[in-house]
Length: 143
Ligand code: 4BW
Image (cartoon, rainbow, N blue to C red; front, side, top):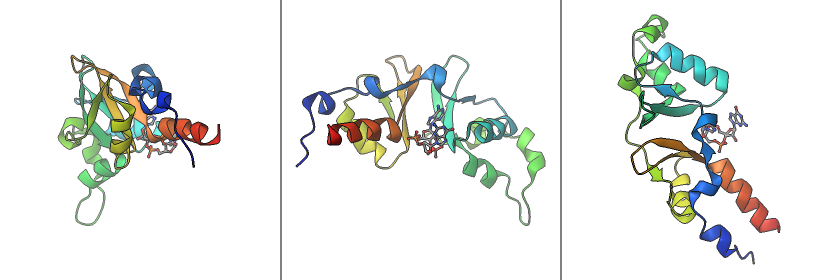
């Protein structure tokens, strides 16, 4: 039987967070063309949307973008530069605070590939990904 250490179970998400400066993101006022370029270049399927003050606003993903330009018979690519990210982004997503317990984050990560972390003033601090948690869990299992 694998017994997880208290250190792991009682940790807060801060220890596993990818800091904001390393997270690819867009602003709500950016065009879908800009967002799609960033998503394609970064290789990520979904990234956070922030406002000009670095407050978290939602998530934008490549499938939401392609869906928004899907016409009756073709993709209307010319629309990419006229539609703004804030019109298409998903804003009802779970967010966690910097002091959220790891246990809570793990249960949310069952349904979401990553969680956005905000501080008390709602400013974006970074993300916690499935990978960062599974990496540590893997270490716990084999130590
Ligand atoms: O470009 C990549 N670099 C690395 N190192 N891994 C990647 C990359 N693209 C995908 N991956 C891997 C990761 O293991 O595929 C998984 C799923 O990617 P996703 O969801 O569908 O684009 C990645 O799993 P993860 O690290 O647990 O990340 C979960 C999700 O978190 C990603 C993406 O939506 C988001 N994400 C991760 N790091 C990010 C990020 N978004 C913006 N900036 C980052 N630095």
